[in-house]
Length: 203
Image (tube, rainbow, N blue to C red; front, side, top):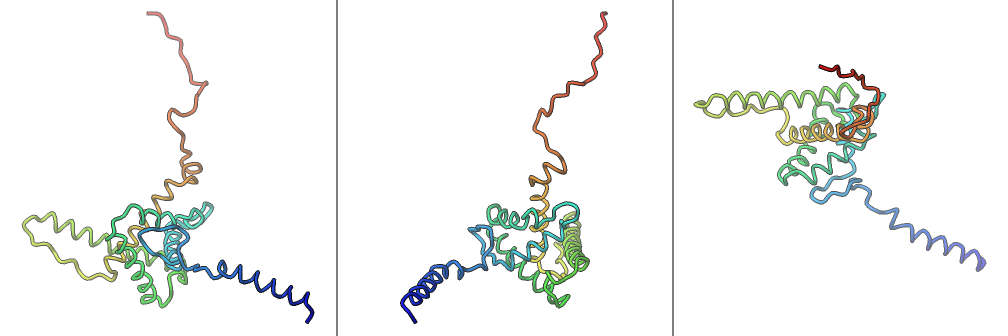
């Protein structure tokens, strides 16, 4: 092998080594910078799939198009208490496990109708528990009722509740919604020069 070929090959090796750190970076972390919770890319994808089921893409952008799953994570990281953040992360794991238990598939492998049925079932159980708690609270002299054991853990229902609330919050406050759906205008709004005018008659 001549000297020129050796130098060329050595340059390729050195160049590859320089690129290696960038190629070997841990890509399992969430795309959004978080301070208080640790979310992997797979779990971020799960939140994205749940958000997309709540606001799917049709003739208008869906939750993923508007990056609402990242908004959910940012709101959770910045605005929720530590115990709520912990419940969210635990509930997210329960959610993934429950999908496997009920359907023998991960949530992203489910078809749209099955995803919707899964989320509606979680919501139905949560609302039933809230109604039972309210009914028990209305009876002042009655002993507090023990909620029946549901199919879904409290943490799972907490996870879904936060994702749904913040997905809707992010959508209704997004630039797309404000400029294409409600067509928001600052007060006092536009000037209307064609407003009908009647001349005041003398008394």
